[in-house]
Length: 142
Image (cartoon, rainbow, N blue to C red; front, side, top):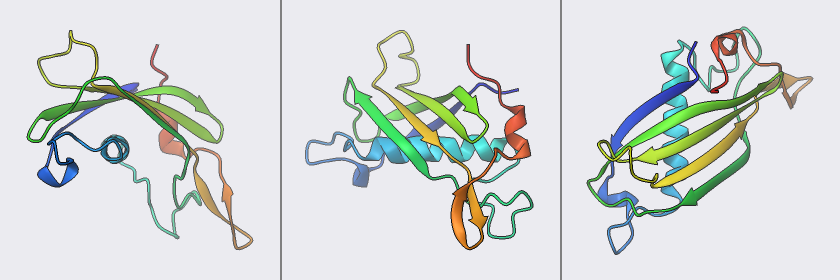
């Protein structure tokens, strides 16, 4: 099943600094939005709620990084491509590549990585959980 997923969006004015360049912190929001769209495309949710049948109520980030190479500016369209880099019993590592559509042969604007862990309540405490059934669909990008 899917090892990659691409989410398109346009840079909004409020996401930029005084020079019209996307603020570094916004790239993390873009990664998260891409991840959420990816999980929705699998018929699931990153926040299924307290009554989730498998006990997973959320996906905190245990590691996040982003390297910036070229500026992204107001009103640019950006393709955020997610790749499943690693899948363990209790964690998924996603890689992200940021490009402008039509510039795929150029170096990426940025690259990032998120490690996410499913959590649920166990005896009133938030604890890591095994990956839910929908994650069985995932294949690691080769």
